Amino acid sequence: MVNNSKILVTGGRGKTGSRIAKRLTDLGYAVRTADRGTSAPGSTNEHVTFDWYDETTYEPAIKNVDSIYLVGPLAVMDPSKMMVPFLERAVEAGVRRVVLLSSASVPEGGPVFGKVHQVIGQLVPEWAVLRPSYFMQNFTEGHHGAQINSDGVMITATGSGRVGFVDADDIAEVGVRALIDEQPHNTDHIITGPDSFSYAEAGEIIGAAAGRTIQHVNISTEELAAGMMKFGMAEDYAHFLAGLDEAIRLHGTEDQVTDTVQRVTGRPPKSLKDFAIAHASHWKQN
Image (tube, rainbow, N blue to C red; front, top):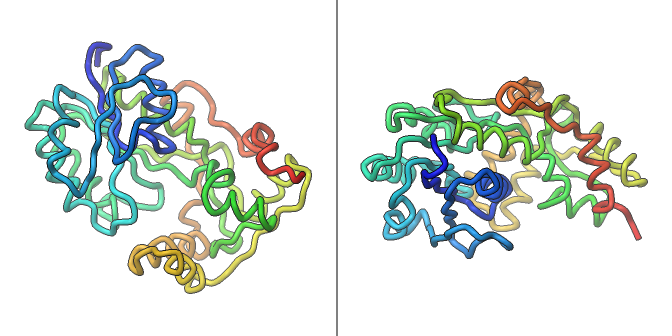
């Protein structure tokens, strides 16, 4: 891959997409970001509107592009119905490399992005699938971040199951290498931090950095799914997400530590302790 190639970053405002776009730009690559909204704050990259549910937005996104960072539609049980036709059109338009964001909890051929993972190697000449564990940023953003700040708790159905929490910066750096390394990766990457922790242990680490008590509250899988549906999530997707927590509790599906970040990027992954220290002000009470 060379610096005059154009790289499309879908989900350009997301946790990984925004980081990948910035890093590629800093390295001198021509980047086009794409999502349903405007470009990320402070971004100087070309930006186009992109909507998985509007096929008229596909062609402007993939025009003159040879690599794509691919983030699928949110909260859809079978995004392959949209993503596979998009990939077929992208390859026809000249795209040669695609890096797909999936999840460590979702195997090839599994639900949601697992179907896209299953076919990507048949559709695209050069490819990689990022399968990160749970983001450390979930503790500063979204429902866990809000729960910690409002009530000093994290609510899951994971019990004492452990998770290899990983920093989005490390996920993004693996993604950048998969996009620009001369040799295509043509594999999936399970991406974790350097340790796995239960949510109770994570709460202790974050609490120590923030100077407050943060507790894990375990609820049933059914209660977790019901809570998601209460906030408008579709029933099938709510049960899918709650089922991931159940699998962590019963089968240890996220209790793993890999060397992917070190091996692919040449640098060690950030620890949860270092992440907590760096973001301690986010959780400190006034």
